[in-house]
Structures are given as C-alpha cells and as structure tokens.
Length: 116
Length: 111
Image (cartoon, rainbow over all chains, first blue to last red; front, side, top):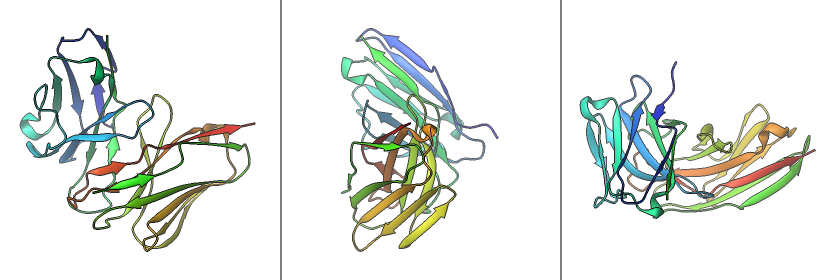
C-alpha cells in the first residue's frame, strides 16, 4: 500500500516569493493534516481536513497561508508571500477516521522549505 | 491546553536498555502516542496507550500511568539504527485526532 506522498521534497525560495506543497494521502483516508516542524521541535498542526472540509484551521496563519482539499483527496498548502521564519519541514499526514481515539496518523516524508 | 515534557537528548550504548520518559498535562485524556523519527525522515508510529500499564512490542515497550500523567518508552537490546528522535504525543483538547507533540528526545546509540 502506498504511503502519504508529498512534493516537492525540497524547496529553496527567496523571501516574498510564493510556494506551494502538494499531498496525496493514503487511499481511503478521510482525514488529512498539515503539520509544520521546526528544527529540533515536534510537529505542530496547521490544519485538519475531514474529506474536503477544513474542520480545524485555528493554527494556520491565514494572512499568508492557505490550503485546499478539492474533491476530498489531494491537498495543497500555499504560502504567499514566504518569510524567513517559514523555513521548516511541512508534513502531510492522513488517518482513516477522525474522532475515534487511537486512529494512527501516517506521515509523509515532508517538504523541506528553506527561505533565503 | 496540552503540555508535554521530555528530555531533549539521551545517549546509550549498543545492546543496553534505555528508558525515555514523558510527562503530560491534557484536559480530557484520549490516549498517548509514541512516534520515532529518524533524521530527515517522517515520524513513524510506534505505540498507543490508553490504559494504565506496560504494552510490549518486540524490543520496544510503552508504559502509561494516567494518574501520574506519565509515560515511558523502553528500548531493549539497543541497535545503532535506534538512533533517532522519539516523540511523545497526545490528542488535543478537541477530542479529535489532532496530535499535540512534545519536542522529542534525540537518542544517540554509541558502540
């Protein structure tokens, strides 16, 4: 079974430029997450989707970040314009259901963003 | 809200046993997860505890005490490939499966 697929794997951009990350979750997983992980820290949730609906985006910096999950499968996360502090690993994850404790979250390998 | 404390770094010898501790505060307990993350890779699921006690899975075991807000991950017969960060996580207060992660414990296994 294919895991969570993300692209690009690595991205270097200049500040004020836009960047977009793409995620394809595990087939059949209704719940999709975007996490951000800074060096030496644990992942922090940015947004969670149930199918195509964003049900928790309280941690998403909405002035520059946006996300969508059209058709309830693939998702994109966009930053525009990027700032130096946005340099981090952006992890996409999926799980089969939500609201039921114990559902394991499966992570993709992440998109490593460096803003210069 | 949630809070998780774990040691930042640990070092242990190949073949030995190491215990990585995690203390947590959360409103409404919905289980505790341990993830392993090798450098440059995604976190991978290790264990999930919802009841008190020790759960063993091969060389790895995880322990939970809900009354003490405490968990540990026990790694036996350490191998060099066990060098990684170990992340303790709890579902957040929404009760859904948003995981709140600790900063992780970076374990280095030396020969």
